[in-house]
Length: 306
Image (cartoon, rainbow, N blue to C red; front, side):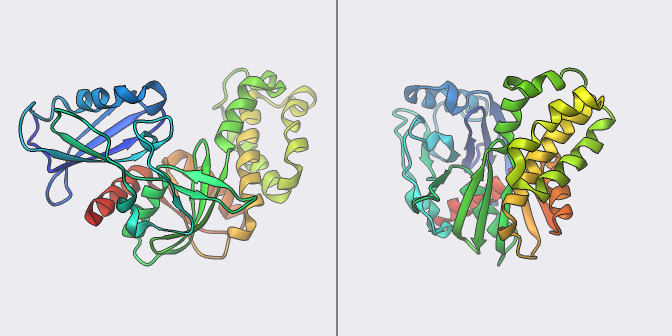
């Protein structure tokens, strides 16, 4: 059993649950994870999932331990809904919007941070979890002001000014890639080794096409199928082209966000590297911020607000 942590930081996503035991100086004493994400749990199952995850790190009895949670546990379908903050939103007060679900008879005292919503007609949008990463970014890069991109299944673009989220938007790029790869006519061109030597060439061609003409995305997508039928394009090239085209169209469609400043990319290194390549082609510079580092920095900053 680990030395008892002072508090526990939790990122509860749709698919996975991750927790870190935090020491008094913000040091990580342990890290745990499971596949018991929000999408697999009924509300009554959340306390048991959290307790099981932390069972090896805490005795059954002892002082109460605070647990600060970000992500989908606060969704309407989650443990307890944490109402959204309205954008423009001051993340310096994020913890004040937290809700406290009950864990009767348990050592843990959970609080769930809210997400952020944008209600402007025609620009409606929501985020849960990314707001904590943005708060973390403001701690990692004090005084930062500008656009931030968080690549993922549903990529987020946010305009951040210190700890204030001015506006944001979502691009379903990752989900579109999976849907097109598995459920569209393009799947016939994507059977086989998708990570071969032709993928990089296809990626660059797709990025260039998407950045140059994002408004032509629906017609350019069919080049994947036509290229394999008529030009002998192999599955690796086709996969690279499809990925690059979708990312390029996302970047090209958001050119008004590219203000000449360096853009932080918060996410996994491989996916962020693809966005960095696209941004370079679009004339913008970027830097990669590890998603876990940003999440933990955000949870620490929110904890300090309590």
